[in-house]
Image (cartoon, rainbow, N blue to C red):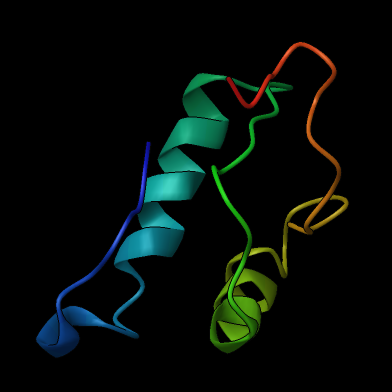
Amino acid sequence: MEQPYTLEPYQRCGLASLGLAALRAEYPGLSWHTLGGHFRSSQPFWAAIGANVPGGYEQRGVCSHVTSS
């Protein structure tokens, strides 16, 4: 998934939370990263959708197998 976005009329309706919950249910134990950095303005989003996720969602270093080239 790259650059996920929800149109303004549908923001804060829980769609992203439901989508990520479905992914976690279908692939338990899987971890992933988003490309690029998390914008400061998106921190409340990541905090909200990670509220009931063990470990939550947080920005971490890039995996060693990922290169910038």
